[in-house]
Length: 478
Image (cartoon, rainbow, N blue to C red; front, side, top):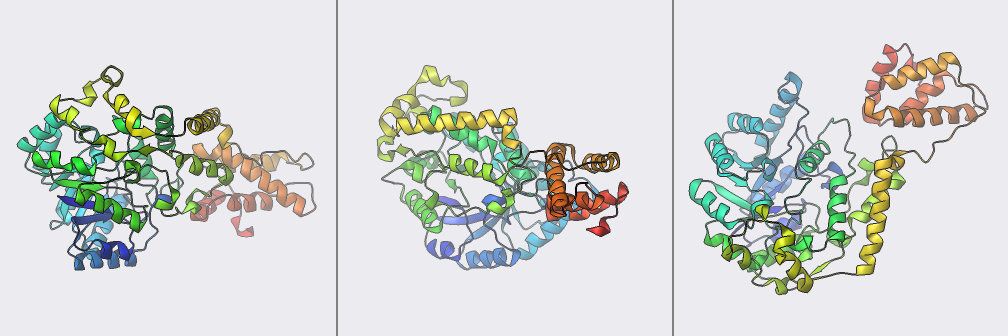
């Protein structure tokens, strides 16, 4: 057994892995030009120097480092002059950092890596969704070294056995994700995560994870989904080793060091007594996770920060107990009956539902209360109420002249379409506040300019200056 482990960049994690089955750790900068599989706010906030030191420490312990370039979308900019140069600059940095692997989801990026980093091994990301012999053979022809398979094939032993025979690559299986079986958000969620971790993206790291909210909600309504989820228990890794797959991936870069070491211990010992959910990515106990950098989501231009706190609380709502030892023999059903879950009606099969009745326990009343909270949240998200500003009000004793209104409308039209509604409310309110602070009644150009800068993240101030000049406003007064 060889384990690929997510790193939180704590030096104590590397030291704790001495003598373990972990051969590779993986991670990335909190944001870069490519992006990856976690939002910036939910990644360890480390610098280039820190990642370099971490890689050196890993190498001193005989552990390789895998840098993630597993975004699934680059806004169609990867084949433009500026973005392509930025990507090549990032590859040059990875060469300087002496990374051993990169994980990639976009075939064009694989070609770039092969051309510019010939000594670096390439892993195909689970986001590439290699769920057929044909796809695997395509990537084999590209010259990659390994493929992380999508979780949805984890219990399809017919497919895995055939894949092992037909394709001469290493295959890695994710063992700790608690994703929904054949997740309906499988396409959209990686897109969301990619953009939420890309430097210079218009979202600036802001990330309201609707997919994760819906996933949590579905499990609250149908707790048997925890059993249907295609994780792999420590005790069941032997079945995969028997068919020639012995590489296993442990996920979640925001878990604390001791928790990650506990998970590694369970898998290399192939045994665990306790709540299986503690090994999985179930967001349940906040103490198991590092504190995210909420500053990225503290953006009133997008959503009132106070409303985002409701999101964080609900994401950690799944207080579930999955008695791992009551799952002994669980996987044999799929092997002996040659079950392909993707071609099976779960309601007709009923196996996971039957197992859940004995292995899963939770507070029914608490779940019903949480479901109502989720229903309320989703109603607000779909009605638009969630995005309305708590400060949306009219100060009736402030006068907007026709000329000021005309300039204001030009200012709003210069902004991206998706932000215009929010910007209209925020800038109008802030401008009127400045009028009152001056003890005046009329909105002046200076009020508009100051308001525009104040409600916009500093990262975009240079762009605002350009827009103001284009519409004939002297930004120098700011």
